Amino acid sequence: MSLPEQGRGVDELLAEITLLKKDDLPLRGGRVTAYVYDTGRPEVHEAAARAYFEMLEVNTLDPTAFPSVVEMERQVVGAVAGLLGGGHGIFTSGGTESIMLAVKAARDSRRTAGRPRMAVPVTAHPAFHKAAHYLGVVIDPVPVDPVTFRAVPSAVEAALTEDTILVVASAPSYPQGVVDPVAEIAGIASARGVPCHVDACVGGWLLPWLREAGAAVPPFDLSVPGVTSISCDLHKFGYAPKGASVVLFADAGLRRRAYFASASWPGYAVVNAGVQSSKSAGPLGGAWATLQALGREGYLELGRVTLAAARRLREGVAAVPGLRVLGDPDSALVAFGSDEVDVFALSDEARRRGWFLQPQLSYAGIPANIHVTVTGVTLRGVEAMIEVIAESAAAARERGPVELPQGLVELVTELDLDTLDDTAFGAFASALGVELGGAGQPEMAVVNAVLDALPADRREAVLVRFLSVIYS
Ligand SMILES: *Cc1c(COP(=O)(O)O)cnc(C)c1O
Image 1: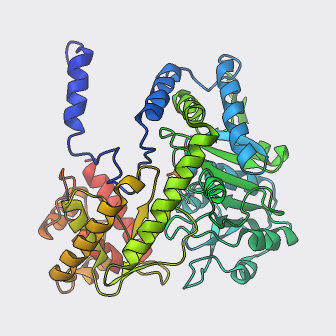
Image 2: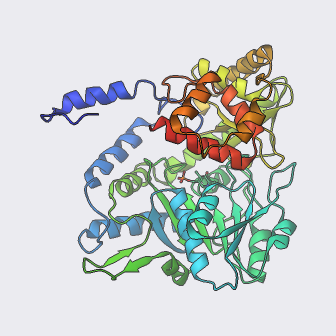
């Protein structure tokens, strides 16, 4: 953009935003089965948007200047604590920040002789790797059961060291939607005096409603002995606009370890609960309004239809020749794989039919698969979704698996990314028929097949390059 010489009117700007968004995936309607959470009730999202707007310019930096922030946050955190076994919370910008704060609190509550370490199941969210990277913590990966995809408690025990500052369990883990054996894992941690964080980012505001709607959900929250912190994203199954999560600590002393204060400069005194300092209260207002607009009854009803949709989807997918549901998901996340159909091609075929089905790469012995997040809106279109999955599977079978040019994977593996600039990388991708930064509906099967063939560290290097190129 070149900055306009004269300021422009709001109507013109909004028209331009509409144009900018023309290739975006749709936010509503249930055809995008990741990233967005739709209640199917426009009035709820409208209430959230208006409250967000109302709080937009309030700065949460100084709670004495804007007491509305303190009151709203106490209410929102209180609602989450009420559902998840109590505790002392912080409202954050998302799951990643909630996890970052839980890791920081654990690290700062223990002194270790060596570098601090944490035991993290291989199915846990990358936010733990990010927190480890930012906070100087080493990850000890914990394997999961190859059939159930749940973390193996004996392997957690085996991963513990003198320097372990935190043990992690997910409720559920995102990839296959299964709940780790939280009670057993927390018990092992507590026997060694080690804190245990439950990542309920996706499930915290879902599992209790599913349980009430009749699903068998094992205990997973702060009421489980040994669990010392838990994260719960309101911008997922709380259906709040993005920028809303809560991290709860079992005791206020541990929460204080997440806080940060600095008076070491000649300016205003800084005390922050989270990573950001100046920060809009918009997301807090949006979350507060969403909780109020739906209420207990609203969430329970959403839980009921979500459970019904997830069950129907599992049944429908299992009936498609060549597809199988991975594990026995206890939540509204359903993953399916195939030994006969290229799932990356299936995802592209679905995209061509107007549906986004999220591909997941193979990792730690878990095969490549497709991930569907079932939400409140899914049920009314679930038959259409199953039909599209069946058609896309048939079309993918017809197409056959992606054939990568001979030697390509070796070439990418050995590519010296340090000596290749972004332009050269873009040209390299282009030579493979992949236009980085191109708008619209990219054919992702080739990209996914290449990534899938690489070890994780090479995937990461390529992904960083990709981001650098699209922002060049
Ligand atoms: C989404 C998610 C996160 C990370 O949350 P963000 O809000 O994207 O930062 C962490 N853990 C799980 C299980 C998740 O599903």
